[in-house]
Amino acid sequence: MSISIQKISPAVGALVKGVDLSIPVPRDTFDVLEGALAEHGVLVFRDQHLTPAQHVAFSQLFGSLETHVISEALLEGYPEIYVVSNVVENGKPKGRAYAGTYWHSDLSYKAVPAMGSMMYALQIPEIGGDTMFANMYLAYDTLSVGLQRMLEQLWAIHDFGHADKRYFSKRGATARLNEAAKKKTPPVQHPVVRTHQTTGRKALFINPGFTSRFVDMTEEESEPLLEYLFQHITQPAFIYRHQWQVNDLVFWDNRCTIHHAIRDYGEDTPRHMHRTTICGDKPFLSNFNAV
Figure 1 (cartoon, rainbow, N blue to C red):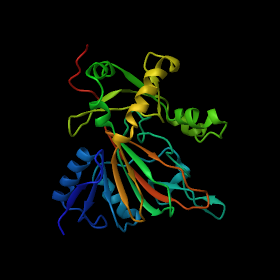
Figure 2: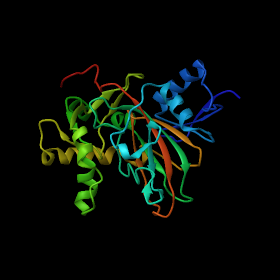
Figure 3: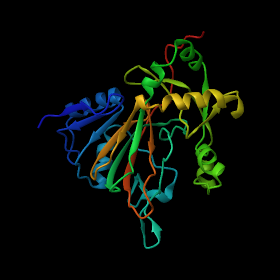
């Protein structure tokens, strides 16, 4: 069966057929997948039967793999795999429960953020537990030229601890990030608009989860424009909502998409996933033109 790639939504994402990820991927197939990821932002592979070693091996075709700072959520024997799971065995969590239940780009809080992520579904709720993806190419392209030029001059602070402050502390909930993880991930600066290394296209590079403010501005000064942009980048016209099936592998490009795991299922409903995270490059903006 030859490989086929079909758009899965008008906004972002494609369904890939004709590839068995449990065996070595030929070079020509890799080239097709690499180009498709940059073009579509999200690739969906259905009915894949992968061991952790096979998951890691396929991921490594695209680059070196990150080891997540939340060490207690790493799969034993496979530190490249971050376990996203609400399953508890013998009183011990099998992974990080309800991770990423807000819009974000993986590891944007690092000086060199992740290029891509691959999530493999082992157990899913019968109903719910979807993940939404938003197209940051479209988010940039649909802004006015004046706002595009203004944003191209700005840098923003990305902070792993910001999600706790924005989504949990304000509600009186227990902080999700421990002090050890915070110390390993100090705030960093990135351009608000970045150039995609493969396509050369511009994409917004901000997200509600980790972007706290603009450089040289306070959070209060930054808030009006950031909140406008957060509403803009998450509008329905830019979104694909993935309904997981067991043995799905979804590969997304963190350089041009953001995503949001929906928490609409109970603690007694298992959702167990394995994620690898592929190292990226330092964000940059080419062809900068000052106003």
